[in-house]
Length: 444
Image 1 (spheres, helix red, strand yellow):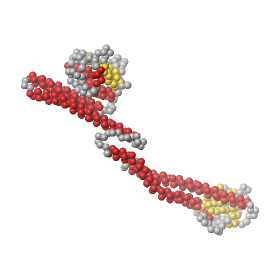
Image 2 (cartoon, one colour):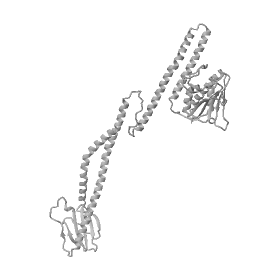
Image 3 (cartoon, helix red, strand yellow):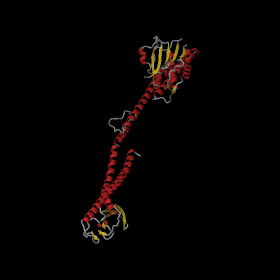
Image 4 (cartoon, one colour):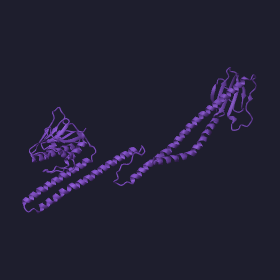
């Protein structure tokens, strides 16, 4: 069910219900006011009769106070008056039919049943007990007045109710016009149109939805941009290795002697290794850039991570005659406490150690230092000049003249992992001005 139809159903059900409740309340209030009016009239009539009797010195037989003229709209049979003396003898009555009963001890209003009808009778005792005046009215007369007043208001309301419901339906449709406009705008957009929807002039109820929608558009656009960048980078970076592999394969096929074949095989193997490393790192970087937050975190146990990473880098270190070392803090000092993803942190350390080993001088040492507030990877290589530090971390950026193969993505991957863990990766030199230091610290 649409939002507009749901609102209309709710309003069309609630409006008559509220109207009926208001009618009941109005009828009760009208009944109260009518009863109050008639009660006051009866009391006033009884007092007037008693005041008249005080001026009468003689007591005669019962007299009738019923007039014989036309009654107009009123029905005089619905009211009665009676007067008794101290001995209970009827002195005055206004009708010969239903007579009010004599009650010597009654005072105030009394509800009675006379000839099967409900009556409200007011008994008024004289101060000296000489007279008892009773004035009563049939309850049905009051109900007629109440329902006459209620129905006099009911008819206009019944006539106005369809107009009111139509006005509410029109109002609901007008109130939902911005939603229809937003729907039309989004439906008319092209698939790649991810411009944010204007929020300033939208109704306040729609603004949180539009803000969330614009945020989703921004995330989708960032995802598409990453995919386009990945596609462009892959097309650019894979073109050269594939061309080299094809050329090396041609050389291998045409090799005339075993020495040329062996040399071509070695070059082809190195090219395949470089291709494998490039594709692996490109996929890793693409996956990391698509991750907004870590799926799981836990306190990091660094010892098994370091053992795994050093085992992965050991073959490269032995080939380049590099010694690997790890320095832990004293027993009473925690080793860089961190909540994170152990697998990603292993990738981070592997990239840092791999770069440190690849670009360290042969026969030197690459050391890993753990402290309470930082983690460092140091080698004895030449200090990096300022222009190189500015471009460090850019995709596929490598220093000129490097003998070791690489893709130029290791630092980019490391920086992305540090961002996901709330860390900062800083490059510099040791305190003595030599070597290259990669430092991990908590981001400010």
